[in-house]
Length: 298
Image 1 (cartoon, rainbow, N blue to C red):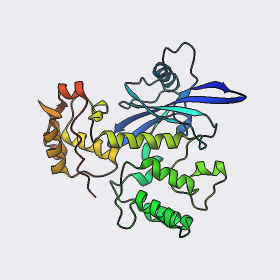
Image 2: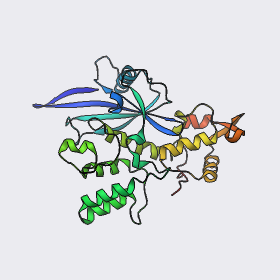
Image 3: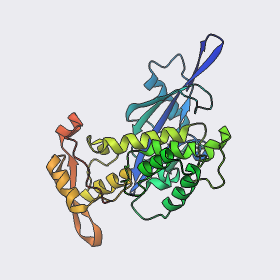
Image 4: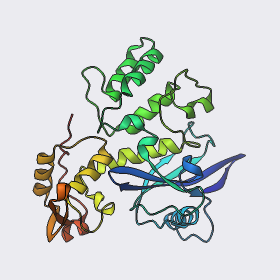
């Protein structure tokens, strides 16, 4: 939603943008408009009682999907914005429902950031590193940034640096959005482009969620009321983009005292019954726990 403000003779645009996330069958999904090229957004109208109320109204108007949990994500106001204005972005968590409005659709966020999914070997990273190294042209500072962000050499991949990796690819001209600023590369990195700086905003949301799942049980917003531990693990893996050690994950969940058995079971793998769990009421009330790191497979 854009609101025009005048600063001297300059018009500054303010835009509110929603990143609505769900996890379906182990796939992190984002609700988009314009056939996947944009995130829901629109004009702030005088009748909206607050920014959040306006955001909810626009998302429902553009996608027919109600918003549950929502928090402010980030404010962008720099020269990478095509409109040279300000955008205030919000992160919302939901469960996927059919997108019934024309142009609205749920898309895997790895469609936009395929290099961020380490659950299976994709083979994308060597090509990206080759192009980045060519762009670096032997400059030590650029090479250090590449190694630190993409886990090259002895460096370790940090799953939370999603935005920084995208911005480095933008700077190197390796994403289509950079060509709007005359930064053109012969071989762009894979991934679907988005309008304006919406992919940059999506990168910020992914990074925020990857950080939050380590210290707040926000995943309960993405799960059914009752779930198996396998479903919980797959949801965490989908968000992190990495595989979790199953035994360590079970111990991690038990140590945090996040969930409790319901006394019911469901049909599991190979026809074996799987116990159903739910988040403890205290967890739902406090929405916080101690901050232990997830047991990622490196």
